Image 1 (cartoon, rainbow, N blue to C red):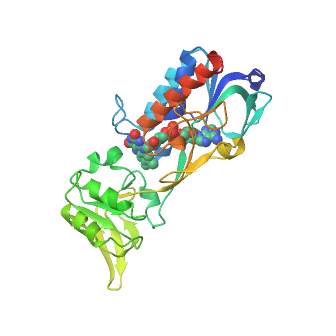
Image 2: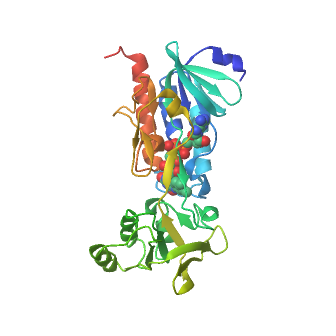
Amino acid sequence: MPDATYDSPYDAVVVGGSWAGLAAAMQLARARRRVLVVDAGRPRNRFAAHAHGFLGQDGRAPAAVIADARAQVLAYPTAEVRADEARHAAAEGGLFAVALASGATARARRLVLATGIVDELPDVPGLRERWGTGVLHCPYCHGYEVGDRRLGVLAVGEGSLHQALLLGDWSADVTLFTNGTFAPTAAQRDALAARGVRVPERRVAADVGEAPALAGVVVEGADGRAVVAVDAVFTATRTHLAGPLAGQLGVAVDEGPMGPIIRTDAKRQTTVPGVYAAGDVARAPHNATWAAADGVTAGVYAHQSLALPAP
Ligand SMILES: Cc1cc2nc3c(=O)[nH]c(=O)nc-3n(C[C@H](O)[C@H](O)[C@H](O)COP(=O)(O)OP(=O)(O)OC[C@H]3O[C@@H](n4cnc5c(N)ncnc54)[C@H](O)[C@@H]3O)c2cc1C
């Protein structure tokens, strides 16, 4: 597509072409609106070989699901998808101007941010190369596949207690590695013991095994080092918004349980009229289904804001 096309404004530009962005674009395209999806191709779950829990797609490779979704969006004649990165976005003369890394600028009457979030992994040697395989973020996404195996939780704070208690429904062999991040109270110890969770209060020095699989966790204390055999470790991450667009546009951002999230109303509109946000970038908790559902909401209401008189 020649860049000259961008002289004519789109009804909507959707930044991010994954679960949330394609779901938003699908609604706009089905409403026969011109929509451009710009996608840098780095979805959050690209580290996992399989995606679980998304109805009709359970267990498929995430990239395959997204490729199918992209093809289905592109079947609508008013939809375009461009592999590119939005570097700058600003309101400009009643439109939103989105400057792309390729040098083109796309203009649109509405903007949907579906840019996702970036995980900041705990700083444990060996963890990064196992992310999405031996080291997992969410039992609802990947717990079933490691059911009845030896499971660990690498604590990042007191909130990790919750994850350790939950995991008792996936395995009777759960170890909570507090890693010096918090000391369980007597009541918390009782709750963990009631679920059969072990709590070695030692520091975690490394993850070991043939990456990306995991064979164990090296713990160290005053009495030296030891390897605790585990087949998978769950851990929570801190997250940050992907890219600078939210800041450039001046949308309000709140602090969520894992990191910042863009504030939206029930229609998924941000605090800047005409700018919508959907998916991980604007919610917690996260999964692909919620992201797609939010994308539908943003797409439908972005369309209605174009089609109906202002309230
Ligand atoms: C390891 C792992 C495994 C997971 N497994 C599952 C699972 O099995 N099931 C499940 O339901 N959920 C799973 N999740 C959660 C799931 O990945 C997210 O909830 C989901 O990806 C959110 O979708 P999204 O569309 O909001 O963002 P993303 O999927 O992260 O997509 C955002 C897209 O926007 C693009 N983008 C960002 N900035 C720009 C820019 N400036 N210009 C252009 N494009 C841009 C990115 O490159 C990316 O393609 C997993 C998460 C992780 C970390």
